[in-house]
Length: 346
Image (tube, rainbow, N blue to C red):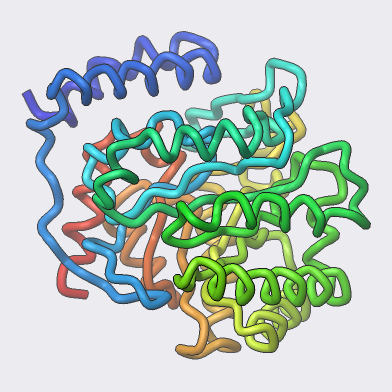
């Protein structure tokens, strides 16, 4: 039985229960299935290597951060055929996130609204989980570790949290993502402002160089940005990326814009909107970044990929790699192979 058919049978049950409960059921089930070898029959994408940020990715389709915030399910996720896996966002200290309910499906729009709020067990637990994974131990592939700040850390001291996390995750990461674009941590997006971004990137770049010397290994840094920026803001971000020699940019996180889901149930819930409604918004940011950055800083395209054609559109806009999240929830794991096939040789 194909994974597409299996998922089509499982999806009605998963969609009948609370989204967060479904999430908390699916990941342990995937881990068990992988542990028992039941995922070995999933057809993997054929190799289609890309060299980006100085690393060779076996295929250009990755998992976006947010699905596995604590890095507890890496081995199960690795069986789905991704060219790279990104886990997190992790913060220095454990925090529960926002009160439940905090995740809402909008099936008519193939979308999700979440206000999780960086719920995670803290960076020390996260690092232990990464170290315990076979994926890390056997160096099976490229692993991105995504870091953020605690909700109760004042925004003017945010850089302290990023530096704590960077120091702790650096030895175990293929690359590190700096998440300054979640709408669910108060004032976080303020760090995308010109002066705040310069101060943050300057200190992170200094720390990266020190850690590279200390560990005798250079780990690239990528910045994850929001789709809710005008042209001038995007240009400012691009200039900061070039000025500080940041290795990559992930475009984009979720949107706070509700235009595409007006009048739908849950549309007025606060949080970040992901899935099909963010597709074109993220493409606009990617195109603008590409215009500013050229080939100097690679772009990882994420937001609303629900088909192979969507993945191709992200590449056409200027991305070098793509990432999936909400599309997996609506389309199932067969989406990985579909996107990889659409991008093969392109």
